[in-house]
Image (tube, rainbow, N blue to C red):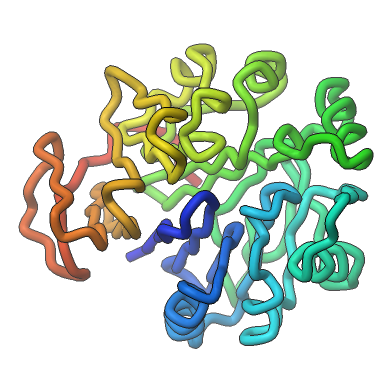
Length: 298
């Protein structure tokens, strides 16, 4: 069994993957005095028996690394995966300073399209790979170079986001898009390898500004799109697709077992009538399941 969890952290992102191997992955964070103790305690507990724990930061925005110093102090980050950049900020928060320290340290591994890494996507006789692959950025792509220049000048950061795909052998796949903007995604459609993916976390927390373009959706053909936390007036609700909206659902836990994904949420009043009822109870507040449609997996 593999578990993917999306925490409800306000206008920001934080996820973990408890792999069905000796791997544990944290993607982004937005910790505060209100949520840090609870979330860090859970992550420490879930990762305690794992040999490899990695942290991936999709891009250098405060709502994707907020409170990273709290996490790093509580359970030191030894493997810091990041798109190489020299981002600057007018206001250097404590979190940004820690991000910069990690980014420039020997703990950093710079991610890019089709990069390889033990034990991210290369296994050996002692430990299997995590099932994570990096689909973007292509550091030679002209649109990425423009986005990186804007990032390093402190102008904008969204379009330096990594695209991350996790797949379970013979099972589900999940994709993260960071805060990529719609126009940028359209410009790189022919430069990124997209394939059918079970669950896609909508870019930019589900905002209209990050609506996944049709040219991507046709290739991804997602069974579920998770719409993150942002003011409702800014959200795109992806008509025609099954969705889970984190504003209403709270924390979202996905239990990936064989060819099934079972969904649980923290908000007791949240229900979904377009999911299958398989009577699952591994976690609290089960809302339904899907059967993974045919796709290529690792």
